[in-house]
Image 1 (cartoon, one colour):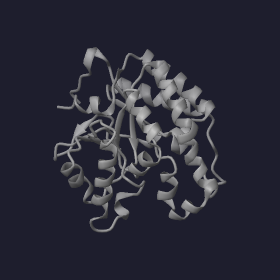
Image 2 (cartoon, helix red, strand yellow):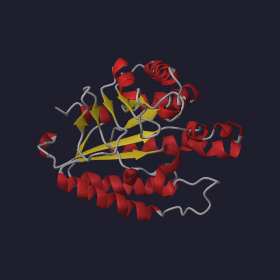
Image 3 (spheres, one colour):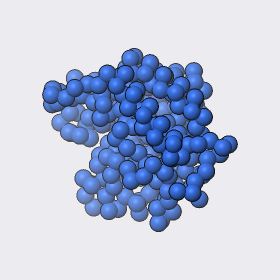
Image 4 (cartoon, one colour):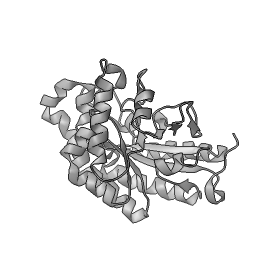
Length: 261
């Protein structure tokens, strides 16, 4: 692909966080709303994880994109205000953390509009969207266009940013560069092994090297409730030093999207 990054950088890097708090658990099973033990995993992200993440970004002088469900922004306005005040980008992640394909007629647009209004209330432009499910319904693209969304970071079909036929830029993601497949654990999955931070560090390093060699975009999608554990924050710090040593072009998702012709 004929692609060049600013400043002669070989590749690009977009660091993003899905600040889901309790909504990711309720979205996966509405009955979890009455299970405080399950919800406490998401509460950790708002109570502790988000602050450890923001402190790390401040120490490294890096800006990231935070995809936040509208309901989380309503529940935790102080945390979202700190994201914005730290110079980070605030982006759309639904109102509830619900797969777009699970909505009935008109429900997806109403959910999207409600989140857009809530997030816009923090005084910063909302130009990006990440589907809570890394997936779309047949209506999602039209809804994004109607609300002036300029980019999505939801699909997994490339390692280079590209533009959809309707003009929206896609910043591709991939499960290998998401913390959830490596660390996610729920009471219903006792047969799942939780990876050691050292294992995930090696996986991320190798994938980043490969993308760097191709000249593409490393799009890291993380969650404060998952990566915000002490051992994983330390690992993320080590990984970010590795990335910075590669001489990549860092940018928020909106900044990266603005480079796509």
